[in-house]
Length: 460
Ligand code: ARG
Image (cartoon, rainbow, N blue to C red; front, side, top):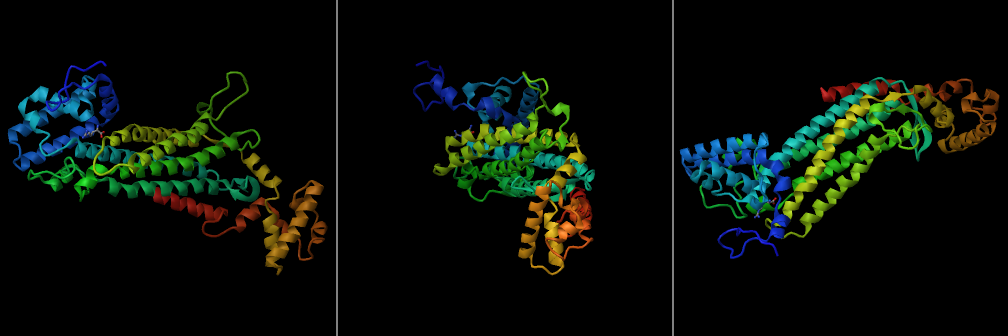
């Protein structure tokens, strides 16, 4: 077995084996935490100084060294080494190289266990802020499109069968509402993320006279975690974030499925702009909706990560275990995936062109106003179940005639019920049907206009 020349510490009599070093190192991926790691270290060091655990001059050297390291990392000059396992040890070693003795004092009263838990929370709260802002950008694009299509009528579907005519804007606003709830989930999770683990040290706290509240204040945490064991153990905040992304991606996946269908020539309702589609290597006529297809596909990996993180937690005894190092690659991928997805989605939605004619024609084709005929009969005194039966017969007749209900003669309609009068034709139009659903949450043009107004106010 190939061996590393260096022992992990003086406690060991043999050097770490090369394959073990590679197996246990996380620096290739956790270097992404470098900036928040430095931020956390600076606050920790400042607290050590305030509490007179280290001297003011030690703090000065540490702060100077950390600031230099920050610049080295940002400019790509920093040399990462897997011999130093992870981001924390890489930075600490470099600090000691630069400033000497004072650097060795930074880790006083701290463990990598509370350090990494703090880093993950600092990192995640930035991600959550960004996600919320990106959801709002997508919501704005959705409202712009909806604003242009309040009076565009499309067939509303249930079971993928034509059900009732609806305003296209009403359909789009359904996604706005889903995004509102997604956003609220991220906002609510913030208070569970933004609480400080530092001070928990390895698991039991520390014997130094630390001031955790001061560190929390410096790092803008809302509170300090109340139990040192819990502070270093749990990754529930990451699992919760992953779940919220899974649900958000689920909503986007349903929307994507619709965009894919609507842009197929069988529907022809919309066109996704050329920049968001690709061609086929063999069929020159093809224009494929790759972007929504990939969004639908990417939910699989996000959900996979959710299961990975849940499984990662479930068997661990308290407190910290190295298993937790496996939280990083999945959660980083979740963060990248949702960021890219939201970014591209907002632009794609902004570039959609709508064929009002195709939508209306489809709504007209599917007897979508049959319920309106039944409601008409009910308003004239017929019990709803009976009316349902009468209209079913009328629809069967119209299908045989190859026409819409509104295209039947009054006389023909009256054969199904003498209650039917000339006024029925007003109800049988697509517009009449949509307009009649005029209540809070309904699809009438006035209802949709006021929903749109409220939605804009929510984003203001
Ligand atoms: N790289 C580790 C992680 O991601 C940091 C904490 C290591 N702690 C330890 N006691 N080995 O979880």
